Length: 50
Image 1 (cartoon, rainbow, N blue to C red):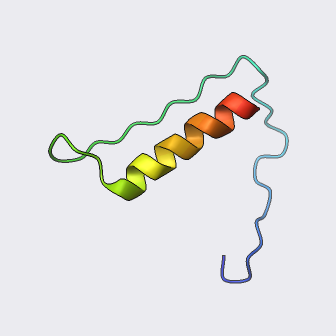
Image 2: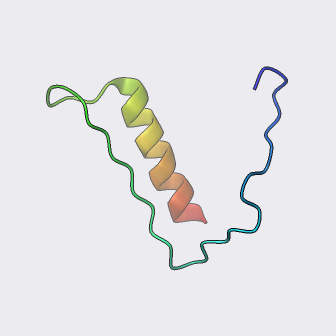
């Protein structure tokens, strides 16, 4: 992470187009922290585009 590089993991695993993505946040209260909301928005846009 410090070097700004990512390493591929589970290269042999290919979920295909039929795989569902779930994001679950278990927190306190009814409001999401801004960083969690931003991450969920990012996931929605990324999944939509791919």
